Image (tube, rainbow, N blue to C red):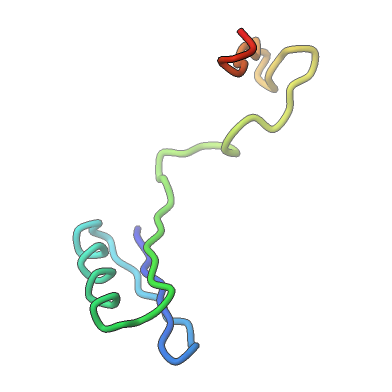
Length: 75
């Protein structure tokens, strides 16, 4: 699902689309009309759990795996 948000005379509006190409066309259409704050968002349907790491305790992730990421310049 994709949502297109925009404002008309400072009033927010939203439209819902199932197809990304249709949502992109709607976004372009609203921008061409001079509408403001035009944006398109979507939610990843394959995402499970919270994004990112929410806890590292003693070098371990919540699922027990080792947390090994470090900044490149620290290596």
